Amino acid sequence: MKRILLVALLLFCGADLFAQSVTVNDLANISNLSNAEAHNYLTLGKKFKRQYIQDVDGNSIEHLNKIGPDNKEETVVIGVGSKLSSGAVLRTVTYTTSTSQHIINLIGQAKHMGLKMRLQGADAKNDIYIFDNDFFHIVMFLNHDNVSGSVEVHQKEYLGFD
Image 1: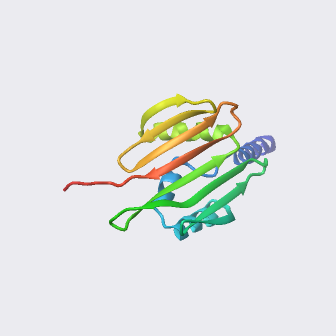
Image 2: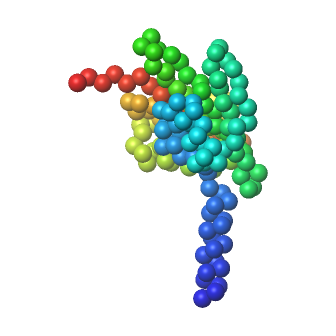
Image 3: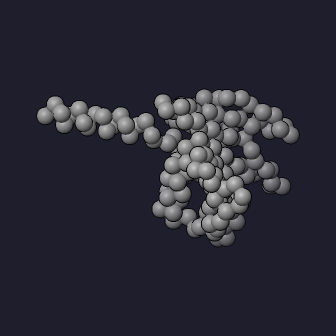
């Protein structure tokens, strides 16, 4: 009985070591939040820490970093956006990881969520996957060396007709 509990405990701990910090759903939700709300979501819930803030054309772009127990780094960039004539801001969230398996998992999550894959291709450096729906345009890059990758979630302007 003690062996079974020990094995179960080891499996639980092992699963936590290799778990990624964010999901496609998290990234999409973060793009809908203000910078302060996104910062709080990532620092309180996902345990990211502010790495630095950059001022670009009057926008505060925040880089948040998380280093896992296996020294695998994950970075989220918030604050990038374009202002519409209506005053609304369309935000972009960028997630970068040094673990290719995280990107592979995110690709699987996007397919499972029912996002339509618009393109699966490659350039000289990356495999490229583009997903799309009415609200988001998601581009995933997986390096050919299978060492790292990134995800960009672009919020779209939704024109709903009643």
